[in-house]
Image (cartoon, rainbow, N blue to C red):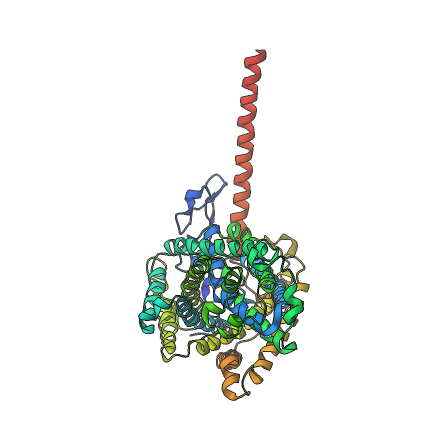
Length: 565
């Protein structure tokens, strides 16, 4: 282990050669078969770090949806609605969407400029401090390992919707679900991307279906509602529950629920034609996630009262606001269909959790922030060591459910993930602001960036303040939780990720004596390969356009000759 970044962050090998006649010959140094798409790739093998660049734009979008659309949306929004009320949950999720947009902008600028493996972990290490990158990397890996048991716990709860499923032992279900997650992750990344693409496509279809259903329901299009509902439940039982404490609870749940742009950065090292692909992916992914979460949350607050008996007393998907809305609409059979979609969402999110956790641990090893052993990959680019460790720990924690406290266990995991998510968001904003300082110090015009976020950097400063506020909300709930007296147990069961982050940072920093990276020392050399790729693509595109115009002119000339002679 060393206290500096590895040599693969230095300037990549030469990729443009001078020929005998003085012209420039572009080497074909692709590491995948993506040249079938008609473009020549200049990216040096060092940039790929053993990964195979095989993921397409559609697969990236669906994988991001797969990571974001899980129990946080289907079940967690019900808990937020119960504690905060319809207005409280609508406002908190909308504000959270705003800070997530700033995060997508930050990830977009940094990752599109230098789309290599390591994601925002590398960005934090290169633009802030290697110790900062180590701490946030361990924090991120820890969060996604915790999501594995959280999603499997939720999957078991989803099955309780059908009483017949109780005939199978709980440990057997856990083992089956873990086997599915392992099975999906042992394939080549192209196959994994295809599996996740179709599972996420079905999830998106279910979300869109619920948006239309609840819109029709609140507009009075379903007879069982007795006319339009609209904002009826904002008046009775009330718009906001439990005051600021309820708002704090909703903020914490929103942090757990929202899928962020960090997933795009993590998988950048396995993306085909990375700059062009990621540039076209970032904003569409955000607006779809915004629609899926914010629009659904507003509609849920219109269709389901916050004091509904199932919302207060039921567990699993019986307490899902979407299932409750269907039951209140008295639409027979649709509740079973939606519960099936929820089950698929949970399993899909579990599959993605194992993928992201393994890539995060591998990124730490690839940058020599931990021992290189953890970054070992097979000939197909699969990080088998990191995958085994992540699934071993996450899968082992799943069996805590066998003692019958599944709801409590899920609450622990979701709280731990929520606080870890806040650290991720804050670190991304800090790394992005430092990234821009480094570019300015090295004479790079920010207007030439291949992707530019709107309202940057003011959106990042504002988002940092909101993240600090949500940190305060989580601390408040850790000390004075709902339904019980505050204790050391209640504090660490939900706030453990905070001391873990600072412990990792200061131990690494003092042991390896790392320093804050100066703007002039930040490494942007690897972006040169992608700059060259952009120039070559632009040149090729212009030549193709001129050739097409020439052929078109030739055809016109021939037509004129045929008519006029």
